[in-house]
Image (tube, rainbow, N blue to C red; front, side):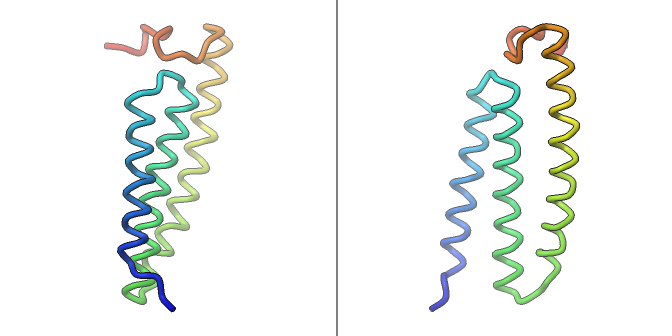
Length: 101
C-alpha cells in the first residue's frame, strides 16, 4: 500500500501555511525563527515526496544540504537573539526600533 503524493503535498502546504501565519502574527523573535524553520521543512517534505515519486535521489540530496544550511541558520539566529537580549533585555520585536528603516 503506497501513500499518494497528494497527501504529502497537502501536509507540506499545511506546514508551510502554519509557518507563514507564525511569521505574520508573532512578535517574538524565537517564534518567528521557528516559523521560518517550519516553512523550510515544508519545502523539504516536497523535495523528498517528489524525489520518491520520480525515483530520483536529487531531491533527497538537496534536502541534506538544506538541513545543513538550516542548522547553520539556527546557530547564527540564536547568537543574534542572545546578543539582542543582552542589550535590550527583551526578545519582543516591538522593542527593536533600530531594526526598522
